[in-house]
Image (cartoon, rainbow, N blue to C red; front, side):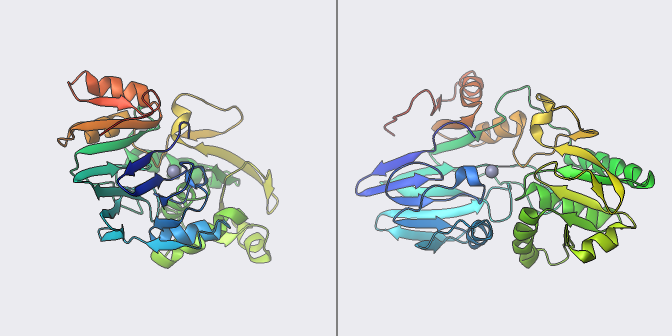
Length: 321
Ligand SMILES: [Zn+2]
């Protein structure tokens, strides 16, 4: 994730979003490490985000839980509502109301439904601060169902050849989505790297049916003898239970940056593609739109062409609203 996260200053309140630097109230949209800011005076996030951070040994001791859809008042004159952002378990946008102004900060956002959760819904506000990780028209993802089908087809074919299909994916969010898909569609055990295992235990308290084993355990080795699917954030093994491992890469970046050495590439992303972001930004009547992270200038330029008041926060670092 490139670019600095936003800070909002209003009368007597300083609100930091995600990894923004400084002191104040910190709103954490989700438990990805590139969004983890240093602990603020008070840290606001959903219970799931707090538990996933803790499973990754990131602790926020002064913590206020903001359940989805519940308006909270962490400070006089400031109200906050966390809203589903569709990016991973516990991920939220924040709608902030202060000084008679309403602001919607999306954090990382996915507008499309996945096997585990619903996509982000449209919400009204005067100002929208929207992520633009894939905010360039070169990023257009296939339907999620189609990507799922391709993953299953590749895994089944690899298993039929007596080999172990292994997927390289982020350990929080993407790994559990692939795990859920394999659990639902194929009758094979899912083995995971230790860091995926820790996060998956938090997922299991919401999705009790998820089924997985940690790699390197005796039980894991035993079940893998008859075939298994492996998920890890790094390409870390070449053999499992005497079988050859074949690697696939699952990330939206495969559309433009294809690393060598994988057997298959799947553009599975926890973000929206350009069309998803663009539609989200233009489908409500936001007075001002600020784009942030990734292709923020490109997305802002496309929105300005529609006559929308849009700026990249990377280009315009201070704005009076
Ligand atoms: Zn993220």
